[in-house]
Length: 216
Image (cartoon, rainbow, N blue to C red; front, side, top):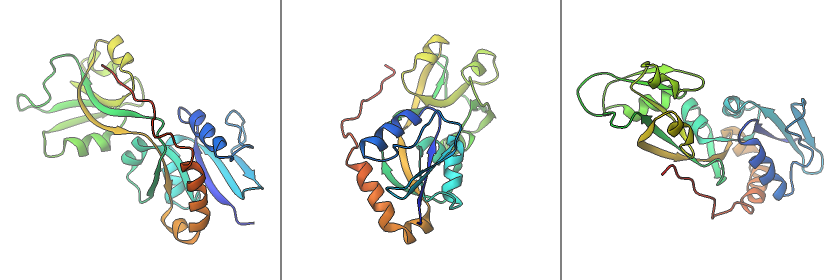
């Protein structure tokens, strides 16, 4: 049997992803808490791979997986050649520039120092707006302004609680993101029917009235 291979992200999206797939009658055999990395659904002819979120786009781009579920943040940061096939209406948050109240983003002409886990997204956003210098941090980017390492940060914001607890505020909202299903371009051509069947099953369960978020 030729399986449709689906890359699923571990971590913050895992619970919602698995719930959505099971609502659609799929992925019953998948255990996100298992040490196993490959699960096969013989009934539906689907093979699920459990991978780190940052690797989902790579697996799909390289054709190891036909489709994958991942956040738009990772898609944008890696900027690989994949199709965006379906919005899933969960994992909803926003990219934002944050810092101390009153921080000038477009004030005096100086290099704006920005700490972020997303240097590519940050550079593209500020391109043509002002000169910036990015510092890559893998976690706790809120610490950078506190330690005078940066003027501000670019990060994902859901509720704004961590910012508030550290005396920071949203200075500028950039854009919204959410979880998406992505596809390999070749697979989409040669496994089109299987992919469309998968998408139709998941789309039937997408909640058009997804819970909004706010940091106000």
